[in-house]
Length: 117
Image (tube, rainbow, N blue to C red; front, side, top):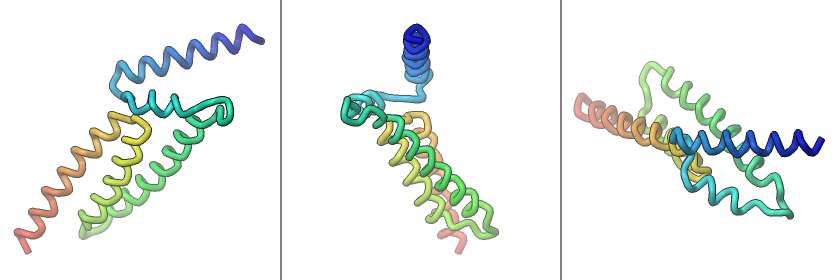
């Protein structure tokens, strides 16, 4: 049994390292891990789980907003801004970068919309 735990711990370390190497995570994730201690051993799992739940909700809202005939880019931008903030807080670097690019796209659409009005 102890051998299986050690093996799983090594797999977790290796997988986490690969997420850093591939640019999915940044140092903010390390800081999050440092907040975990004996009094709250599931802290990181809980925070990341909340991130995934919130992300699912935001992505559903984003899909609804983009599916409208007249897209409200301010509403889209607000959803993307929330996702960017939560991804930044857990160190999900690649998600954060995609959100920044998406927000720039929303800004361009807002400018186009105001010029053509």
